[in-house]
Length: 381
Image 1: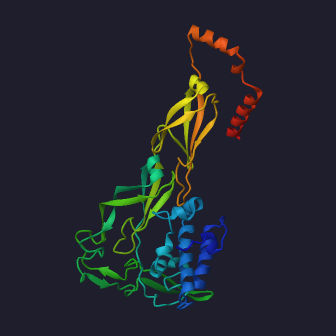
Image 2 (image 1 turned 90 degrees about the horizontal axis):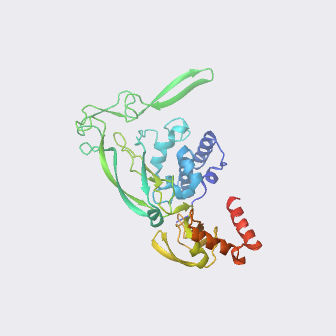
Image 3 (image 1 turned 90 degrees about the vertical axis):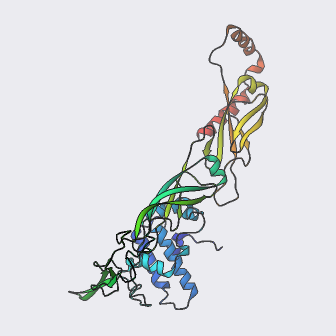
């Protein structure tokens, strides 16, 4: 699989570029590599599609925010590839042709597309999916039920009762667009807009489908399988192409946007790809050492506590954390050591501790003081 170029690099804009700058840059690239200007040139066609893919992401506020945060990894349901990578030429013309001031190709190029009717697109849906830390670590397949607009099975999305229930729109004569000529001080100017009578479809329904009342869609529940990759994070948004609302009277389905939510673990804390566990030792265990059982993402694990373990010490279990998204790296399990000091003591315990305190080995040396001081200073810097 070819490595995708940075979208800002594709459009030759900076990461701080405004929407208008991005739109202008895309128009320039699309005109440069338009297939009508480069007939039979496969390289130009790929650059044309690449520019459309970049604009689809950077021209959308939500998608651009996710791209800036997660890069290409946050741009699809499998966390690989981009939105526009599978777009056809017709998809590009139908979705982005409006920024060029009309439907006649780009800047007046024909290509036989001047009579192309408008293609509807369904709206996107957004759902939230809760994951446990273990599911984040391993990846998971989930089935969710979504209430959405689906294509009418009776009329197959046409909105008409049968194939004979159509008539050509008399306003646009079947083109789906209306061209008007205006006289201005600069001369005559033509503007092309979507036909208001048929909504750009080029035809009118004479007899509506009784099941969907001529809309071509109706609300229903759909069970969707989600394959969540390992290593996703709170707030990440994955996109499942074509699983959003169906388009009215045929067209392109919207996308399903899956927002990740992490369920708090009762004992473990996530820090990017590392997992943190705060271990509270009794004073005798810290002083004498021993074996302690701790929780991990896989279950329980036993670790050895060395005699004389000091508060603030961090033990590290390599590769016991979370995987990096789309890579082979693994985080670690970090164990923060704290020592519990009893809040109340018996008279006998107080007397014994008073005797122990007089012993030289119960007094911290200067090197121990410096080590603990530096350890806590590093935490807060």
